[in-house]
Image 1 (cartoon, helix red, strand yellow):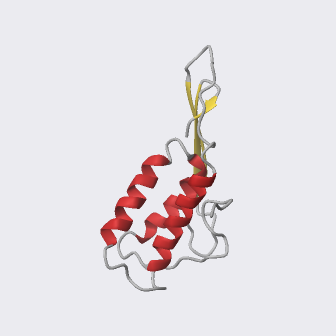
Image 2 (cartoon, rainbow, N blue to C red; image 1 turned 45 degrees about the horizontal axis):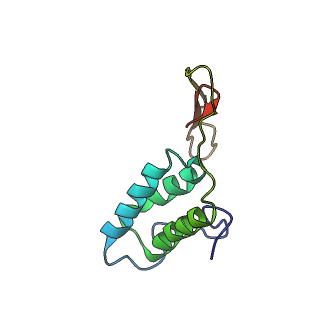
Length: 122
């Protein structure tokens, strides 16, 4: 069945819940392919990044999350980057950051966007 968001927001993935996968290389290859796909499907970038945190010791809930992303992709196949017919092909990157914005961990948040002409590409 198709799903409407790339990762189930009711599921909290951790590194210690669930059984270890018997063949972790299958999970690693799938996440690698999904990571490559984020170049043209930025809507799955956060989900794939989150799932890639568990590459060292993937567990059954992690593969279930990756399969959820695949079901999302199957149902939302019309979403992708479309290049506009722009008279220019200027590459315009923008970024922003908040240093140590999380009070407990002192971690920073950063983000970026890249336009090719009028088209958002990253």
